Length: 490
Ligand code: MLC
Ligand code: AMP
Image (cartoon, rainbow, N blue to C red; front, side, top):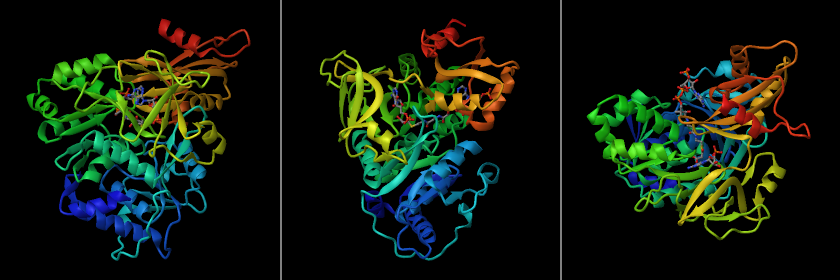
C-alpha cells in the first residue's frame, strides 16, 4: 500500500499518542513489520487468510492492522461490544482461524470455543527478527467490515488495498490533511468512520492521532481543553452530548479548544440542522457534514473552503462519481426530484462475502446502488432517507430491524413482532418494537434482557409496545409505517 512507502519519510514524527505514551512512525513501521513476520511464520505470503482483530483501540490496533496487510492477510476488525452470537456469525462467515486480541479483553467469555480457532494476545507477540515480507498487489483483498442491511445477519463488505487507499487519498485531498494536524480518536474501530476518517487519513499524511478509547464526554472535553487538536470527526449523537456539556459548563478552555480547530466534521447519520446551528452559536464553528457508507467510503461532502450548508451533504468527493435514478432506473437530472443515489469509483468495495447474489443485485454495471434516497438542491446533495424501512440508524450505527425481529422470535412466548426506528433528537433514531404474545407474556425488563443475551447494546429496543395485534394491511402484512405512528402518537 502507498501509505507504507509514504511513511518511510516521516519515521521520526509522532504518529500515535496512546495510553499517555507517544509512538513515532518509525515504531509503527518496525512493530507492524514484526507482527507481519510473526503472522507469516514460515509462509511467504498469507494469501488473503482472514485474521480477526478484537483489540482495544490503542497502539496495538494499528500495528496489527498494518501487520496483517503487510503479510498479505485480510483484516477483519471485530466489535469489542459484540455478543457471543454476533461474533459466532462473523467468525464462521469469514472462516476465521486466527484472532489477535488484547490481554485486557475478556475474549474467553464471548468467543465461542471451536476447534481450529486460535486466539493470540498481541502482548505476547515478541518476535525480534523481521523476515522478508511479500509485495502485495493493489487489487488483492485487504479488509472485511460487517454492516447491517436488509438481510437479518450483517454482511461482510470486502474491500481491496486499492479501495482502502482510494478511500483515504480522496479525503486527504478534499479535507486538506497536513502534517501539522492532530485528531482525537474515540470512534469504534470496526467501522469505516473510525478506521478510515479518524485513523488512516492522518497517518497517511504524517499527522498525529490521540487514541482515547471509546467516546466519553468528560474525557473528550478535558482533552480538547488541554490539547492542540486541529481536526475533529464524530457522529451527530456525539455533538448532541457535547452541546449538553457546553451548555451546562462555563469552561472557557474547552470552548477555545473547539474554536481553534481548523475542521470539525459530522457524518454516519443525518445531522439535524438544529445541531448544526447550536454548534455554531456555541463555538463559532460550522460543522462540515459529509455522507459515506461502509461499501464506498466517503462519497459526498460539504466544501472545506465553501458553503457548509445545514441539512445537506454537499458535492462529490475527488474521484467519486454519483448519479440519481428514479424507480424505473431513469437518470434524474433536475434539481428537486428525489431518487436513489448510485455511486461509482475506485473506492467502491469488491463484493459482499459469500453473497454473490446480494453483490449482483447491489450493482447496476459498475454503479453501486446505495439504497439512499437523495435529491439535488441548489448544487448540493440532500439525503432524504433510506428506501428500506428495515434499516435503522442509531447513534451512527446501522441496524437491521430483521436481525432484532429474529432474536425476539426466538423467544417461544412471542407470537409476532415488528421492529422500526423512531425519530429521536439524540440518537437520530431509536429502536422500537411492537410485540404480540401467545398466552404467557414477558414484561419489558424481561424482553430487554432476552435481547441483550444476543445483541449489542445499541440494537436493543428502547421502546416496546405490547399489542393484541400488529397493524396490518388487507393482505395481512405488517404495516411498519402504521406501527411507527403508534409510537409517535404515544
Ligand atoms: C446506548 N444507549 C442507547 C443507545 N446506545 N440508547 C438508545 N439508543 C442507542 N442506540 C444508552 C445506553 O444503554 C446507556 O443508557 C446510555 O445510552 C449511554 O450508553 P453508552 O453506550 O455509554 O453511550 P455512549 O458511550 O454515549 O455511546 C454513544 C456513541 C456510540 C454515539 C458514542 O454509540 C458510538 O460510538 N457511535 C458511533 C458509531 C459509528 O462509528 N458509526 C459509524 C459507522 S460507519 P443508561 O440508561 O445505562 O445510561 C458509517 C459510514 C459513514 O456509518 O458515513 O461514516
Ligand atoms: P453504514 O452501513 O454503517 O456504513 O451506514 C451508511 C449509511 O449511513 C448510509 O447509507 C446513509 O444511510 C447513512 N449516512 C451516512 N452519512 C450520512 C449523512 N451525513 N446523512 C444522512 N445519512 C448518512
